[in-house]
Image 1 (cartoon, one colour):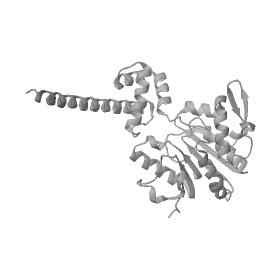
Image 2 (image 1 turned 180 degrees about the vertical axis):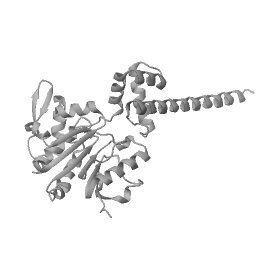
Image 3 (image 1 turned 45 degrees about the vertical axis):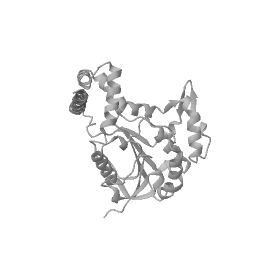
Image 4 (image 1 turned 90 degrees about the horizontal axis):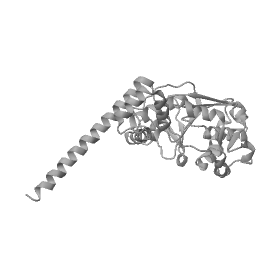
Length: 293
């Protein structure tokens, strides 16, 4: 008898724990459904562990103890939804992030881009724009920027406004200078910005051929045919079905032999789109669209 009691208690604990977990998952699903129906933002196919972590971070910041309580606040307070959007949208970025990627872009992709009379680039999930400015600098140094149009999109309207301002923390400039040099930069990085107080304002000419706009990869379709699409470190937050849908979107948006650039931790392996792309610089996750049949 003395040994049976703990086993029974353990079994009861496990059952309660599983029930709590299931209840929590239902709460998350209901919250995401409510956000979609009321605000039109669809996070229902995001990877569960990641979305739950971000929701919980917002719940704690709002001082509520459950996802159900967060749902009530989000539904009745649009400013809470604005705050939650900042948590849910991906904002991990920097200038010339992964310098070897930009070096590969400069040395191996740019020669192909030169063959086009006019170049269309889609930077999907551009966040606050640091990589868009990086790409504009690179294309300018390679003499291609004047005949390039960059469409920079993100789900979050707030971060797009930040990107349009072209002002980034001055404290980041040392790190960005090192990244720029490692990425094969041809000039002095400081030539591109003017320091003012604690901010660095970048040369407005870098934005002359950039169009920032809101776009939802989950619900919106293609809007042009591109020679290069960058979507780095965004799809790692999607579940497999959503990854496949977004890759289909990119595939249908690329010109023949157009380039797709993904993030370091992303890949096409074991996706439905794997046969539709050819590895171009495999170690940098740069792929090329196979010829249209």
